[in-house]
Amino acid sequence: MQKEKNKDLVHISGDWIDEFPNPLVIAGPCSAESETQMMETARRIAESSVEVSIFRAGIWKPRTKPNGFEGVGVIGLNWLKKVKEEFGIKTATEVANANHVFAALEADVDVLWIGARSTVNPFTVQEIAQALRGTDKPILVKNPVNPDLALWIGALERLLGQGIENLGVIHRGFSSYQKTKYRNTPNWQIALDFRNMFPNIPIIVDPSHICGNRMGLSEIAQEALNVGYQGAMIETHCSPEEAWSDAAQQVTPEELADIISNLKVRNTEISGYEEDMEKYRTSISDIDFQLIQLLSERMEISEKIGGIKKTNNIAIFQPDRWKVITDYARAKALETGMSESFIEKVFKAIHEESIEVQNGIMIDK
Ligand code: PEP
Ligand code: MN
Image (cartoon, rainbow, N blue to C red; front, side):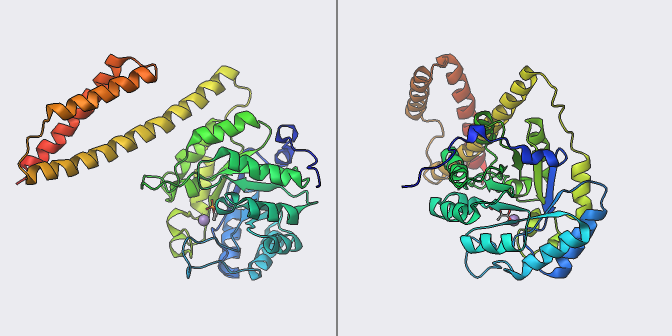
């Protein structure tokens, strides 16, 4: 059995990123669709006022369901080449199997990334890693779709196991069953834990796949820079509404320029305590988002119960039920080392609101 050479991600330098400005901006369409679409998007990006270092385009698209647009395939690699020749911009694409890797290397794509749906599969990652053996191109690994830090790290270890050291990660959020304002919940804490473990590995945010729409892109990109991310990958299309994939989240090159020029790059000289504060604040925002999300789900269920009470003409306030809820909350407070009276206050407020909501339903004809 062959022994892995340098298994320790902590020791890689991550200095490939130093050749790029901070933040490193990667932009381009979700998918390559035609030569015209690629050239027009690239031209407008190149002519814009902001520095985009890498042009991205998906050549092979991992679609959730069959029969959708699955990418133009190898022909799109020629268009990436043309973009590089004409505009002198580096290029990037997603690879999801060994054949993709061979074709992309052959076409001299500068940066390759492993997509979120591939990162989850160790067989796929291993196959890609082996096909990449010997390359010194930067390889970026998107977080897996599920919130599993070990799986994300495992993918990087597989690459490192094949001697690939120019590594970086892309934070694109995590899928959830509940529909929230995000297409993929950021779960900043996971990415921040990653950063704390491997401070040398460059981390880039992908606000497009986190938001799933154009609106929240600036905010997510800024939050990422606030906690020291080194770049952003933003899907950009010459006419976003007509895009063959991810139309809702793509922006025009001009909108991209607007987003990028308004980003505030953090001073890297800031003191340790400020950086720690920023990280903790981001974690708190993460938790607040989840709290609000859960409260709203709880209220929806409460409304359903209100409907049943109305139909069956049952009183809204059920003292026995209230006792069960408060007993449970108090017990949990003890278990988790929180003050019982605080938890009781919180649940009282939730319960009051719930009664209010159910009252609304009762009086509603
Ligand atoms: C993409 O970048 O277009 C893509 C498919 O992203 P993800 O792997 O994050 O879903
Ligand atoms: Mn996409």
